[in-house]
Image (cartoon, rainbow, N blue to C red; front, side, top):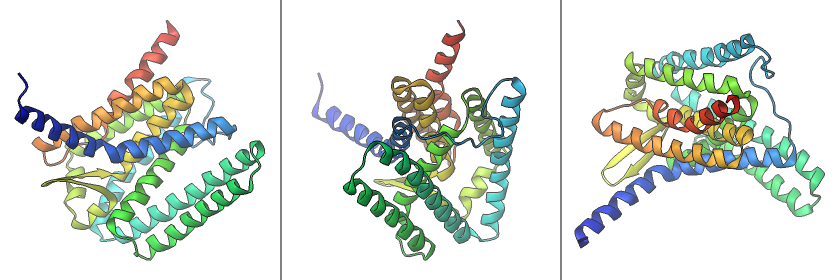
Length: 290
């Protein structure tokens, strides 16, 4: 027999889970939409690694070392930046870089979209979007926006950056790069670097803050970028069905990660969501060799 109290507890639990995944869900959906639009209009994939063609294992190794090396250096560099009190500079750099990348992708997609559809209304919408992004860069650098507005913009920039990376890294290199990122995240956690970064009072400005009742959680912008990267990569290389499964598992992994943070003050954000999100991709790659 299901009592009213049990229903209320279940409803509260579901509400909490929806709260936890809704911002991340929005980030992943934006990344998937960008990737889908790129495929639809035939936009070129811009490589972000030394070798986009994986003809031999050496090319994959170089690609992994290239991006994993950058990621491994970024964590101590981030710690040093926060220690020096340069958080504001870091925030402005992310706003400027994310905004410029958004304008860059908007320009590429617009050029190919206008080849298929000629419309004054579409032109005006693109122009207004670009104007909004340019204005948001200036206002963010000026420190005008509130924390909530900044969070929304930075989540959008994370989606754009993740989608750009997901489309610019070849198939086999990506799997190895994501595994390497998880290992780096775990090593940083074990070394105490993640806790030291989170302990800085100004360090919260490089996180997206989620509040629910008397609890709050912080998601690193880097984590959002890597989640988006995996989602867009799965769509571009394996299709919509695999992307849906991968995205759903990323969201499940984030819920499990949040549960782990209840027992531990801080927990690495990549291993569980990325590990689960890679399962459909590994199944696809394995089945192609059988």
